[in-house]
Image 1 (cartoon, rainbow, N blue to C red):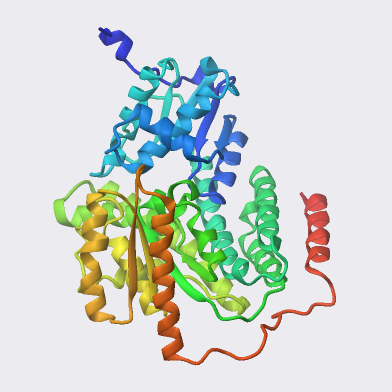
Image 2: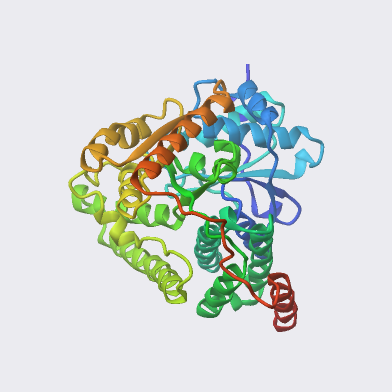
Length: 451
């Protein structure tokens, strides 16, 4: 039987910083590319795990119960698979996970992961947890104020790139052009994070908007489909079977709000908790100032998109928060809480009547704030076409895709009876004499010189 000493988790110490590789599981494909680079610039040897496939699910099932929260199963499976791959020295490798620390099974990730490491023969591998409640405690991994500022900017830039990508990729005339623009700007931002030029926010916004506007697109009308749900299932292609690209292939335009909204939601909940339950005024002041700071940069991004005039801008967090009034109390904050309901309402109010709610099977918060709110939302907005898709190890992609196709069929029928389809072939939005590739090449060269 293991002794107490053997069960004691290995901590990531300052001495490990120089020669340990930190593996980071993928959740946000655009944002995490920049965040991992920020970790590298801060002296950590971080590497992003991009592995996919059924084997990750199978590896997760070997190490955690099949009733465990599906995101936990996937993250643990991806990490154990990486350690078994032979690509890393398991005696000089650490694992990093993010946790909110709220009243959700996600707060148990770190303990499940440590147990899985012991069972798989990797008890020497330390686990680093980035969270709001010091779940791991006392590690040698520290988020400095300088790192935190860069991470906030990475989330803002990432939100903008993700938002514009989904408005361009479904309509691009040259397949793959949108993803090339996204990849190019990730590389540009990674260079800027090491030079301080990421602070040229207004300039960067204009350049980003011009590059996306230069993508040649057609005017074919497509069904818009909003994606909401549990944060991992909402953003991670591994979790939702690459839902955004599936919708694009099916002729729809995905609409996905930025992750900064979730961060603002967490800060707002801290302020709400102070009003409901009390607490320290200092803690409330810090959360209030942080909320205003992040809202300021989000609003600047929104103003830049509106001023540019080509793309639709996202909704400010303040309006998102106000959308739930009369539907659900803001004391409902387990998991994604009232934010998930707010996102569904905001989508419908902005004309996106088709909504996919992605959730792990058996996720209690989602059953209350998503499925539990659907009837109330539909009573107010009869045009709402909402479908909940559960994800778990036994759910086959074909069943999930069939539910999505049925939702799209209903959406097309509604459009057909609501408005006549536009006649004629799609016309290009842009017909530039200078190809977009040439514009990108010129800017690449300019960035290389200026940076």
